[in-house]
Image (cartoon, rainbow, N blue to C red):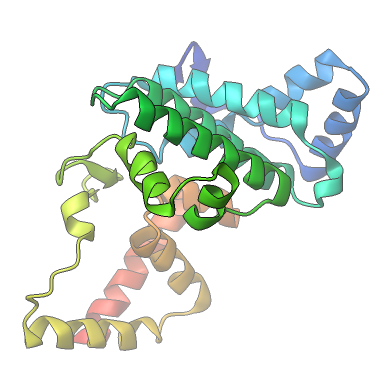
Length: 256
């Protein structure tokens, strides 16, 4: 997933657009300007790239996920309505995620009965309709009521089409700082010593400044890469790396 070139696109040279440029292009797209649509698509490929990094490619190549993500992006461009009063990226991300999940779902190697798969597809359609219309994620009970099905049946159907993961699949990673599924599982057999260390860590976090705390939280609690954090807060990846290392040194000193 760290390829420089995906589908013939050099990801290190992707263009970016300001919010004003996006709004202008969206307006032109609604007027049928295909050149504006192409430019808006190219200007949001970084968004596609950041979204597909969240997915463990498994049997899918980065190229496949990138192409599928681009389809989601173009659907978002064609269906975006400024009346939603949200940023285009806020609207586009769920569309891209939905397209990638649909691709992975349809290529799932685990065999699921036709009736369960059909129920899951209908449930996902209702879910996506609500998310598209109301910009929120509905609960299983709400989906079940619309479909006239039992809530448990809907939950089991949607769980059945989710591709299983290994405990040693990477959740996120940046160089040697990889974290795996097993690292995210809670351990009810923790010793008192570990619990005390967790308390000490929380107290040490309070002594970091706002930027340090923000980066540590994004990095180790939200599972983001340094590059994603850099894009979010508007600084370089190298600066994120320096601040992160400084914050970790502070944490160690405060916990000694």
